[in-house]
Length: 257
Image (cartoon, rainbow, N blue to C red; front, side, top):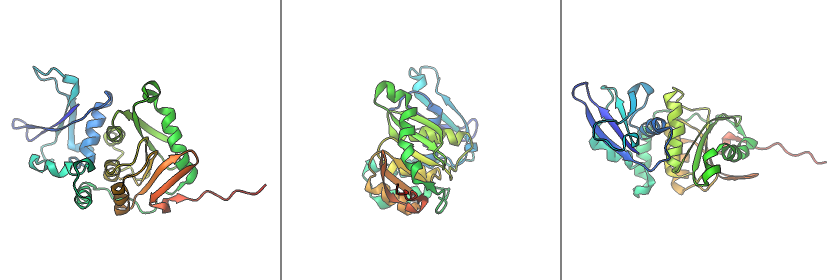
């Protein structure tokens, strides 16, 4: 799917292609909105006038091109797009450059030491994700991202062949509903916790990320930098806390029989 933005005043609008991503069809507008937010291109729901499929004459893949029309007052410079896309670790730029880029885009501060969650909540998240992955049950080939409250209740879940797309979809859904920043939420992801996943969570103001897989070293650095809680290898009864342990309450001691 190609994501485009339309900018400028009526009668003098310009169209810029931002990204082409391999995605699982469905929730395309949420994917576009989440991408625009987490890459720092928009900050508020009102920055976007509308999101629509491109149905211009001659367009063959009309449901594979999504265009976001931005308000004229939204500052947008196409020549600075490279700064946004330095925010992906796959491009190989250094951690310092990447962290500085996230710092510019993250407009919502992460609340200190809250929410505080029970360790049983952490253990429950991977299973809840798996239970709700309907497409994964059919294909065995999709990632999932879910938003949970501090008690471990699943608020929303999205699936996609790309784990970053799944995160953009679930964050985009909350963004379009006017629920960002997500200061009291947990982001659960079915794969590993990459720098990109942590970036998206930081920009959306999410304080806790729980991943089934391993974290990258840059993901841990970002979590420390922004005061986030990062959990990895959350499987069964075990999990590892790589940053922000203060948000996770220890399990109560068991009473000997």
